[in-house]
Amino acid sequence: MDLNIPSFLRNQGIKASYQRIRIYEYLMNNRTHPTVAEIYNALITDIPSLSKTTVYNTLNLFVEKVLVEEVTIEGSEMRYDIKDPKGHGHFKCTQCHRIFDVPIQIEKIFTEELSEFQVQAQFVHFVGICPDCLKKNS
Amino acid sequence: MDLNIPSFLRNQGIKASYQRIRIYEYLMNNRTHPTVAEIYNALITDIPSLSKTTVYNTLNLFVEKVLVEEVTIEGSEMRYDIKDPKGHGHFKCTQCHRIFDVPIQIEKIFTEELSEFQVQAQFVHFVGICPDCLKKNS
DNA sequence: TTTCATCTTGGACTCATTACAAGTTTATCA
DNA sequence: TGATAAACTTGTAATGAGTCCAAGATGAAA
Image 1 (cartoon, chains in turn yellow, blue, brown, green):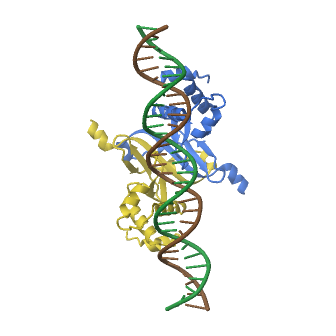
Image 2 (tube, helix red, strand yellow):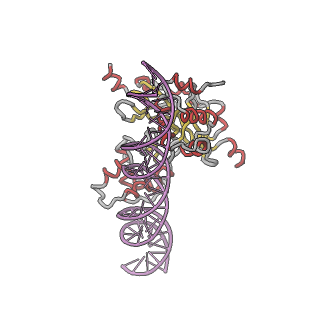
Image 3 (cartoon, chains in turn blue, green, cyan, purple):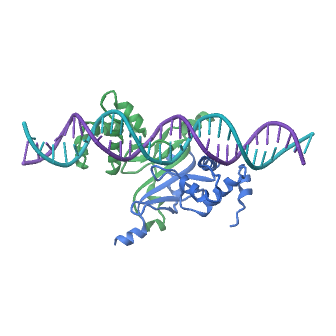
């Protein structure tokens, strides 16, 4: 589980700058679908020179290289999540507003008609009430 | 298939103003996942007094009342689609940039772990290349 | 036909994201 | 090691989708 981030990034054809390493590391350690602002605020004390533009640039690069995926389950701000090759869905609780990772059986979803499309990526979102809030309500 | 939109809206607890009727009608007749700007531009010649704020207000109301769903497959602008009780997925072609409705077997996706969540809505997005573009490429 | 709640309008505003140009770092090779 | 170019980072300014708000218009009910 010890990932050498600099060499991992280089393997993906990405120059391993200090900022990029720290942003990737943050995403690995914080599987909370952070926004750009959250990532920026978490790193600015360690990297006082950090620019928000760099965070945007880096995340867009990671998305393009398919290391990270954009989570669009929320309206106004984009959220980011390390790419999981097994695939998982996202669940937004309408009560506590947390976003959960949930396992799904993505392969089962495909229909005859979809087989004519070449699918490169898929995203599944659920909205509802999470187990914790259900317990509180009862 | 002759839907009386005014009484349909009233049944959903929505006052049937002229603007709301025309916006709902537009969404029924244009299953192209339009943006607010597209809806506004389509209606402004017929309804010269129409305000963009009204389009935003109306769509947010429809989403809240679950008549319409937000399609977040694209980055910068929200898109809207009449709610389909059977559920369908959206497919974005990376080549021609069209968005397709695709049938899915949503019930098959659920896993054991997800059964602890109370799911109120689900959204499935695919990204890839559509049949037309695949044909053109070959 | 008056009353009151609701809806619509447009202009100002917010704020996430992008564009751009200048400065900094890094890789390469003599 | 030093020179050079390419790539990366930074800060500021600009863009533009979406929201807020207050005033005016509409519509239902009695």
